[in-house]
Amino acid sequence: MFKFLKRLRAKKEEADTLELATAETAEKAQTKASEAKQVIDKPEPSAAPAAAEAVSPREADEHKNPPASENAAQPDIESLPQEEAPDFTQEEIPTRDEQVIEVELPKRSLGDGIRSLFTSSLDIEDLEDILLLADFGVEASVEITEDLRMAAQKTGATSDAELRLLLKDLLVARLNREDSQLKLSDGKLPYVFLVVGVNGAGKTTTIGKLAKWLSDGEWEVVLGAADTFRAAAVDQLATWAERSGAGIVRPERDGQDPASVAYQTVELAIKNDADIAIVDTAGRLQNKKDLMDELGKIRRAVEKQAQINEVLLVIDATTGQNAISQAKAFTEVADVTGIVMTKLDGTAKGGIVYAIQKQLDLPVKLVGVGEGINDFAFFSAEEFAKGLVARKPGN
Ligand SMILES: Nc1nc2c(ncn2[C@@H]2O[C@H](COP(=O)(O)OP(=O)(O)OP(=O)(O)O)[C@@H](O)[C@H]2O)c(=O)[nH]1
Ligand SMILES: [Mg+2]
Image (cartoon, rainbow, N blue to C red):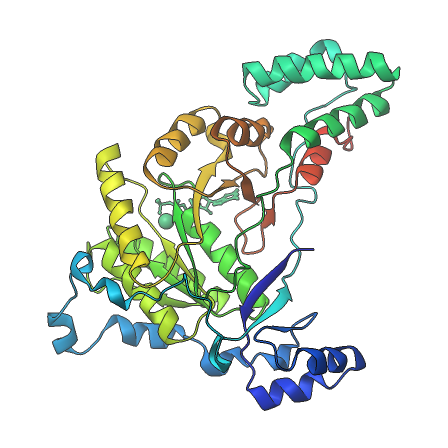
């Protein structure tokens, strides 16, 4: 499974004791003792006293209400000195605080989240229409059907099971990408994710799910409520922060400059040695120029202190082909690095995942399969294709 790098939180002596607890890790401790990076197979829960250093929601609240004098001296984000930003070009030997460990986060699979394309046996003659109805788009529907026909001729496949297997392999081959894993492994902490997308796409919910997943893996997470137009949006993120055990930076007043909230979020993450800052943004901007200005300003504010690892564009799968034009607008203004497809539960239109990935030439990294805190999965071409061709009860 995927390996990620997070901050080593245990005090040096504690870490050593724990590492010496098993023969395997003891061996590693000896060979790696002088190395900057410590590698352990799995984080021992007690090896990461996250709570001791955690940014509690309460602390974050305090941060939200700094003394009046601080309030008066609100920084102008655009004019903050650039030299405050760490120099990521130099490889420095990390101090204890900067040490990172390699961890495996809990696996999240698509499971049964994807609805099958077929309610009866697979008939190649019907396939093009079925793919069209499932939002694969015209071109892909024609191409996939043609490819399956040729593959069936070549292999002599005729049965329903054989055809499903061929179709699955064909979809996997078209969907597999090298870059579909979240960028959480360069060890330059804190990682920063910006989450963008239109209203109601599922940004805040996705952030809550991500925060919970990371917290479960003993990551220290700070969320930033840079969707500052609605108090309800901030409260919604605060609820997710509480549920997931993440810290949160809220705006000090409605309509506060989202870039300054983003700045403060990264600032708090650095101050508290957090592993990751995830910034929620507003989706309801009037036009492309406003969107570009706002996201550009947020980006510059973050980059004064840290690098941005991911700009995740959240797309509601149930909006079908409309989602593609919306997504294109975002990719033109924000440097999107990955797609999150939400609401794949209950939609028979899984083809939109295929269409988005192909048409935007961006990896789908995560999928949302429900409203619950655990209802998301890493995108896996194999699992997704299996779900699409699955023979489910009743078909
Ligand atoms: N079924 C289902 N519902 C989801 C999923 N993700 C989000 N939702 C629901 O979609 C609705 C909107 O989600 P939000 O997270 O508030 O969306 P948002 O993008 O933050 O919206 P704005 O803040 O208004 O821009 C909520 O009712 C969520 O519960 C999912 O994967 N499946
Ligand atoms: Mg929201």
